[in-house]
Image (tube, rainbow over all chains, first blue to last red):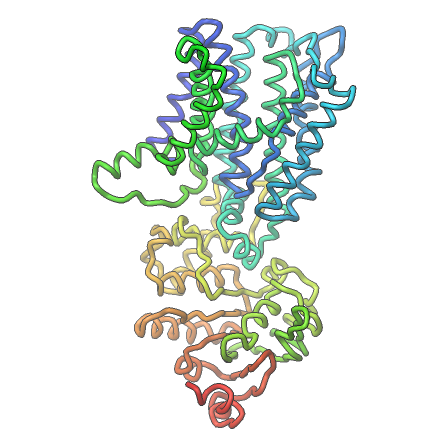
Length: 330
Length: 244
């Protein structure tokens, strides 16, 4: 990792750690939500940015992680995070294993459609059956406890726990990308045919990446359910799969910090266009403003927000920007 | 070391390869020539395991590998290069070679250790880069190499898997005279240690380096012999060399 990237990531995490000291309850809640989105975006970055697999059903794993929290929690008492978290992650990972096992036999547009189809199947299971509480969703009666000393019902405790999870996931993926496994995934993204000719059986690599990605999305789902105390089928909808894809594109594909930046940018844009103080009655059409701004950013920032400094530097020095994915980059 | 026996490949009603047999020996270059559409690339794809034959068998080092996947054949000692560059443009020269070398030392569960710290892969990568003459460019992104250097890197990536058999699909394509000369010198140096199948359109290069030449027309072999004998074969002259 270059010094600039290391400093950027370090400052970002320090900033997030210090944020509750200067922010009110709304700010803490907002950044907690964004950190959950960032973990979710990192899960998809592993598939799209690192491995080159464009999955359009990521929300299913997120939703399964969230639903597992509610469905596996006792009705009369708080569950332990030590049991509930692994269970939620395992449920999401298991579903990812099933989906990946079948969908990774397809490629390109077919892969996108198959993953979407599986996600929609999961969506309709919770939407149309008593299991998921239908469109009304289900409430989480008691938020889980992390031992006797950390109650995730308290916003600051949840903020700290989410921050630690984000740091853990980011660090894990940064190590993974540099490892032999990560380099093999990068090779698969660039030229799978060549990887096979070299001696790599690519299917197990892709399946492992898919399951890992599902597990991380499940972790994000767990945190989301604990934060909101409520789950509904929208957590598995294709809208959310699309939103998380937009986050990583907005931030910059192929960069872990792009997922971080993209999640913040997306959430800020969403809040901005929803603001009645700024847009008055037009705020209810916030999708339009968000969509236009995303189109504009994709057109003007082909390498995403993380590519902006390089783009400015290239403009100032009068050189054309050199393209190419910065492999295994943070 | 590699033997194809009566290989046939049909695409619907089209017979792309018809009863093709050939054998590669260590220390020799076996060239396959033919006009476009003669079936040379289909042959190389079948031998490497990229596509399955409709009929026939492939033997590698005495083992029937017809039903083996391409990665398994590669790990068993079969290296191949492609007509078009398949290098990883954003990786450095060393990283390209190391990734190829890593195929023989995969250990994907070592997720906490940087690939750059894999001593064996890195040593092999540096060695093969030196063998093909790219040792001065180890840190250069592969996308910034000249065309000839990219083709050299292709060969280096093949060598990094430590193969005994090399299947080279038009390694001289698009090269200038100087680059061609450099590549031929490299192939000459590789010859004693490998069995090489060379698919190539540059006839001067083929007749200079090959020990045996197979001529294909419309998916069938019309001649297999030494370069001198092939040159004099009237069937070959009529079908191919005469046009040249």
